[in-house]
Image (cartoon, rainbow, N blue to C red):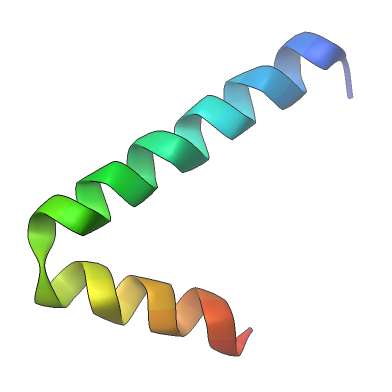
Length: 37
């Protein structure tokens, strides 16, 4: 994995978290699923 790939993945994760926050209940479910893994 190159640094550029890692940066892209990190940006994607941040974007997904932001979308989760905007979605309310669905976002909470996603965070719970991520935490349980």
